[in-house]
Amino acid sequence: MTTRENPKDTLLSPFQLGETSLLNRVVMASMTRGRAANHGLVPTELHVEYYRRRATAGLIMTEAMWVNEQAIGSVNVPGLFNATQAAAWRSVTDAVHGEGGRIYAQVGHSGAVSHPDFFDGALPLAPSEVNPKLQAFTPSGFKETVTPRAMTLEDIEATIVGYAAAAENAREAGFDGIELHSSTTYLLPQFLNSALNQRTDRYGGNAENRARIVIDILEAMIARWPGCRVGLKISPTAAMGGFAPTADTVATYDHLVGRLNDLPLSHLQITRALALDVATSPVAALADTIGYYRSRYRGVLVANGGYDVHTASAEIAEGRADLVSFGAPFIANPDLVRRFAEDLPLSSSDRATYYQGGVHGYLDYPEYAEDKESV
Image 1 (cartoon, rainbow, N blue to C red):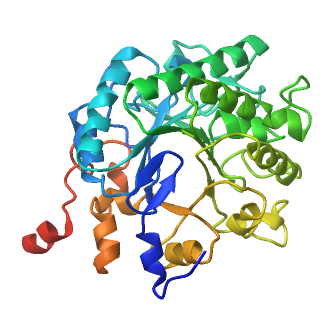
Image 2 (image 1 turned 30 degrees about the vertical axis):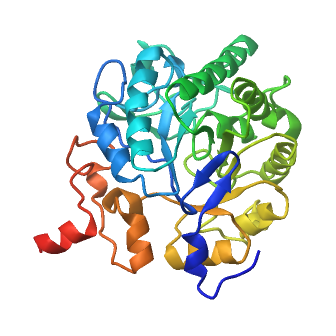
């Protein structure tokens, strides 16, 4: 890549993501916001306006939507598993496209990080009967996770089919593509973690088997939506609750990323390690997470995790990443790209409203000019 005099120019330059033309290389990362406060987990006019206001991002990733009813693990998070939900998401994609933006659907499954309260007392599904020792945000508030039920092969097959159907629903809803959520504490990172995945069948026991479900799902989604419209997000160094990296983590993700090179993906998004004790961690090799996988993945790489305009610009200018995603800055700064371009200060957000609150903390953050006038 030819580096421009000002690295920020590269961050704000157009990019061709498969068949999708992006206005810039700034990606709005997926963020759970919990505003689908209805029985059907259907997006509302709040969602339409929220995403429309952020359409100046080169690419928007939606909040992680549930891939089926068994995937639910937090209150008021929308789904993409039926026609009603897909039709409502069409209003969102139309609004974003009307502003010249591009938007991908992200879909996921909470797995063990759920609670029986969502399933009339039944246990949530997971790779193995291992409690991840986290909390689930239930209709009655936060509750400790429980020991889940190990998925049968039939459960796994049904889940793969569900992801394929979600890809079809995303097409019908007018999304520009779809991203498979395989990061933080969701079902697929549970399969990739040898402490949480204690299976002895074809979906556990070694790196190839632990990664198999991710590849199977990606292949099923690509079959429903070819043309480099399917991406993947991973976080190999995530260490929440029972999700601490293990001695098998590097080998498992090495195998997974190697296999990704054989698939026609739109991108691979990677969350980097922000605080890693390289002296003691079993994933010390991943301290420079983006650099490690840049040398191993041949496709479009999206870097994620605590970037600002300067560090993001440097990653792209140096060829370490093709795009950079931002999460929390987009909450209080719907005009984040403009603020980057014009060196405007960023507003801060209220964490108490991240996952609940209706309009408050969702649609009441003004663009910079309005903010300045209100002071």
